Image (cartoon, rainbow, N blue to C red):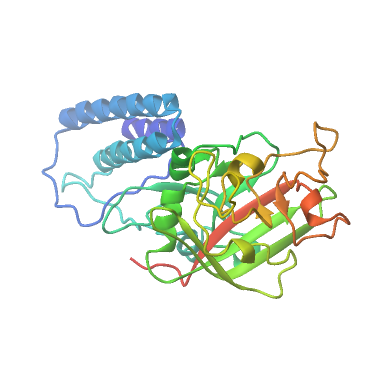
Amino acid sequence: MNRFLLLLFACCVLGIRAQVIEDDPPKEPLSPEELQSQTTKEILSLIEVAIKVAQYTDIGEKRKAMGWVQERLDVVKGLLNVDGGSGTKEPEVTYYQDCAALYDEGFTDSGLYNIYPNYPASSDPLAVWCDQESDGGGWIVFQRRVDGSEDFEKLWDEYRQGFGDPSAEFWLGNDNLVLLTTGGGDVELRVDITDWDDRTAYAQYANFAVRGSQYTLTADGYDEASTAGDALDYHNGMDFTTTDRDNDRASGGNCAVWMRGGFWHNYCLTADPNGPYLVPGGEYGAFSPGTDQGVTWTTYTAHGYPGREYSLKGTEMKLRMSPAISP
């Protein structure tokens, strides 16, 4: 009972779903005293690492540290799952590689999950927000705007690593987009938008990829049943641009500087989900004629304004493996 309570305490502190590796070689059984001592030591180590995770401010370092936490938690669970002195009994684990695989296995609630997109080459986890509700679920959300709490006027390395809070406003990271979209199989893209009257619309694409060191965008196969319009057609094939890395086609300057956010700018945009978050009654208001700035999707006009003059209330960009990647 004491061992069970110790495990429960560790899991509650961390809030992490435990997973352990299959087919580990059996271990020699420990005496009760050895088991108690080693379990206590591992739980203290686990808590120490968890405290360090909370102190990291860089999201890339935090994700890496979460992997260390998972390793320590696996050790603790293995110590506490002993079968009558016959040795440690290792539970099964599945390394889900995407949100679609999780959905297929019954994880149908949207939320934050660990996935393993590079398994079996690597068992490093990636924490992602899974949208398990839109169009059959299985979506990995990689961008969200909801309230302006996160500044998207970031540098190249920040967009490369990712930033923000996956449960609020964030960018998952361009390196992660390359990993998720170039591992084999088709990848779909969906963009959900919300205007200030809470009307919603979406744009869906059959083919999505981010490739190479310049994070070149592929977004084609637009679904004509979509309701937001094909604002990414103008951006298809473009390299990523930030305020400190100019890859756009504008000859007189940098679109990311003008538009105040990194994106696959052309000269400059018909879509800019990463633009400055403008609100009614703010410095510019939600409607910004003549600036082209804001959280924009210019092919959507149900709000009654020219698309370039309207900044949206919310956006989510998400991808889905189709079919899901198999181990």
